Length: 384
Image (tube, rainbow, N blue to C red; front, side, top):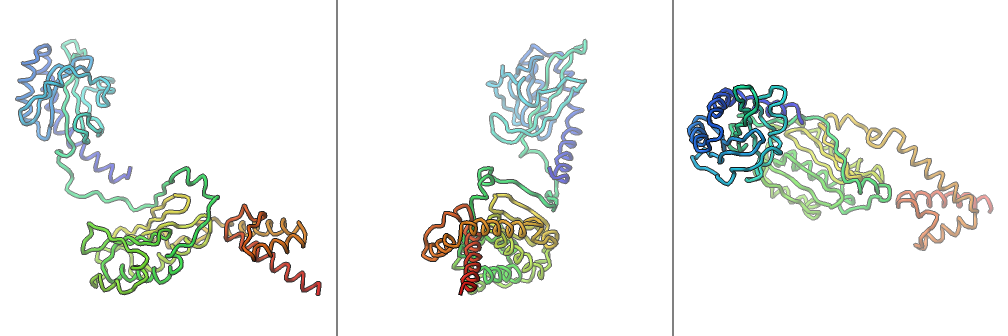
């Protein structure tokens, strides 16, 4: 969990602990004397409920974790159907009473009845011999607890997430297919940069594979808009978005927007197997998100993103490795003899499938054939 998010969660739990624990100790002593008398216990719980802010339900369990009262609610009502319920297996009962832990505040869980995030505090009730005689349960609905005044701010740091294993496992059996967006990528990027620089778009995402963009604007940040290929290739759409000064809240300098999308363009085209499917930029938190053909995702601060070159993404030797692989394929085919190489070139020129290239992606197959044509052109020139 994000450390700052964890700190705020811990702060909330501390507040509940400090507010509740002194009262539960006193209530446990009162209940100890009334164990076995359901009506008396419920009268005490009704009276105490008025002094427990934000509490949703109060109830008492026996030493085995079986409920011996109704649920007493804050509005004065009761839930008699909860009498006799076995709560011993619920997560908030685990470890209570061990190692002298007489008060426990559970982690949040989804309640069985309302199906909402809840907390339960459990106070051990001990008899005069210091043996566990029962438990006092106090339920909270997270909606009704007082919350921190300041919205949690996520830490801006590089995060990676692996995607669907079935996609990752077959990634080398696929290659990039040119989309409509690919065919006019430079003008589309220029249009999106203009919208983000001068028309109040603070979050823009390019879906390279499906040829669309998703944008969020300062004029209506609660709704996103989808721009299809036709819109992205028509500069007139700028007339539909009012001119806005560059955001005061933006942490990304305006002159960095274009270079960021330019790098995304390179990540789309540099490798035919591992390529960018979608990329976005948020001007206000400065985060770049990337989703690749292997279904892996990255969330990275814009300045870190700008500092990484292509060798970082594809490996220092990725280009050399591809070249070596193509050269090996060319040599293997050349070893079949000039007659077969000429047949391969003729078949390729007429659109027939080439068995020798069946294991290559389209780009590598084209490059191998181009190399064979060059070799045969030189060979035939020498023959004449």
